[in-house]
Amino acid sequence: MDSRAGAAQGRLALVASEGPRQRIAEVLRRHALKIDSFDSLEELLDEPNSQPPAVIVLWAQDTISASSTLVEPLAGRFAHSAIVLVCAEIERWAVRSTLAAGAAGVVLLDDLDRTLGPCLQAVQAGQTCVPRGHWRQIQPPALSTREKQILALVVMGYMNSQIAAQLFLAESTVKSHLSSAFGKLGVRSRNEAAGLILDPQRGLGMGILALDGEPVASTHTASS
Image 1: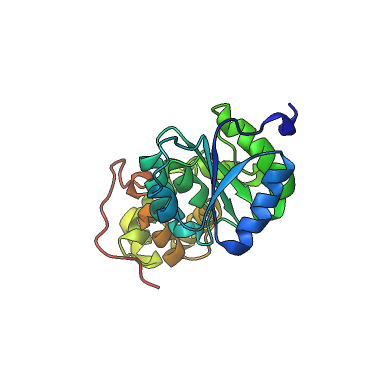
Image 2: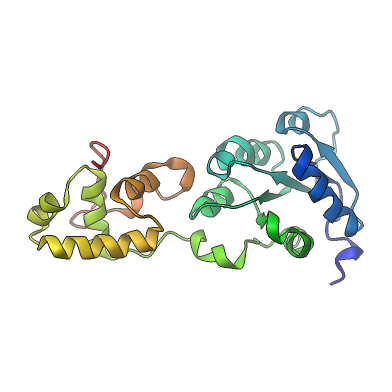
């Protein structure tokens, strides 16, 4: 499909600060797209125009909080608009929370020239569009039952020796399972793992954990 034939049909709104806005707008203009630019989220939310944008291209400096502070308000106000988040980088699993908040696409700034136009076409066709290197983050990590049990105890504040005693395992086995779980979660420590699981903005939640087959509740955060 020729992107210049209309990567986005209908009104397109761009919400970005001055520096990124100029770069994003330049790419959009190369695709022959007419845009309405806004300096802030509030400016778009409060505008009197009765015609909602077909697509909203949204710049986010902080992708950790973008799902709750930027994407959710836009999705609530413009339920039928496709939201595309543009960012310099995005942390593992932040992709999932961004989509869960209502975004339809994610574009990295370094790839803007070649990916923004196709992404706009995809989301207007009802597709979800994320960078290929991040597609695995759309779904929760596939943790084994033992990894879920051990992570549950980590979140509850247990140290390796206590986990080993609780689950009747060797401490070396606990370390091995933790190493595997950390790799799947994309973290490097027990504190990072607990933070990722407990942070509601990153979309994992306590539901991925289990002890004896049942979900567990946190009593306190993991020790360092």
